[in-house]
Amino acid sequence: MRIFTVCLPKYVTPVLSRWSVWDAVFLCLVLCLARADDDCPVSCVCARESGTVTCRDGEDSGDLLVDLPQWTSNLIVQGKNMSTLRRAAFTDNSTDLDITTLCLSYNGIQTIEPYAFLGLPSLHLLDLSHNRLESISTRAFFGLSQLRSLYLNYSVLPEAVMQLSIALSSQTLSNLHRLDLAGNRLKHIPLQRLDSFDLHVLVLVNNSFESITKENVSDLYQQRHMRLYLSLNPFRCNCDLEAFYYWLKNASQCPDVGRLECAEPESKRGALVEQLRAEDVDCNLENLEAVSYVFLGLVMALIGVVFLMVLYLNRGGIKKWLNNIREACRDQMEIYHYRYEQDSDPRLANVAV
Image (cartoon, rainbow, N blue to C red; front, side):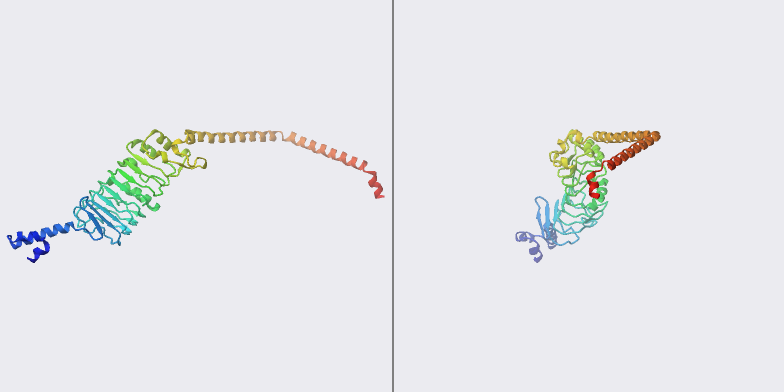
């Protein structure tokens, strides 16, 4: 009976007196396993009602799986100081986990190896924000066919932008609805084609965008359901902004359009992009001005050529005219010299004597 008193509550013991020893042992094992399934991992906080397991702070063990309860649907891991998200980090004896929300923010992650998220076929939300991603494998997000939201804000370093662009182009993310890339100093949208996704929300707040390319604007016209957030970017309000400017005017896909400001040129700094005049971003006017300067230069060059040609054709007469002027000047100087000698002051002559 010692086995029963260790594994079972006291109120169950009387019932076991009518059972065989083997039945009791079997019941004990079942109840112990069930109880073990409910055990919360060390250094974690569990809330079975919401299916959430939260693990914060600790050393980098290299293994994210810490005997998670079977009912876990939301996993939050923060402050673990893990530098690398290893291959198949979420596989447990080749079984898939039924996790729908995974938060790995503030973990100092620098590298995501290929197939890092295998074993999470039901994942809908992945939060990798506030890390320091330097290397992202092209197969980093392989296996996340059900992923709807991906948060990479304040995480991607400049050297990993191109790798991210390739990793996001994977066909496995075709169901992605929300992509958050705020605060990554991006200068262009790291998506090869916007129509490759079913994006509803694209957050590019607080980056380094000076303009949006014509190719991206064309894709935005086709993705009418997409909402694009672009505030806190240093837009260069010149001719290059023309296509994007007219998209802002004609479409209503930018909810924070009232916060888009010009950073350059100096004369327009702080001005709202949507309040610019059409001529401020009209490429035709800039081209016309450039053509005007070119035409003026051509006219001046033609006048110079004509002038030189006239001089060349009249070089004989011009030479004769110059000689006449020189002779006239010489005669005039001789007259002045003669008068000076004749009309010298007689008082100066007396002093000499």
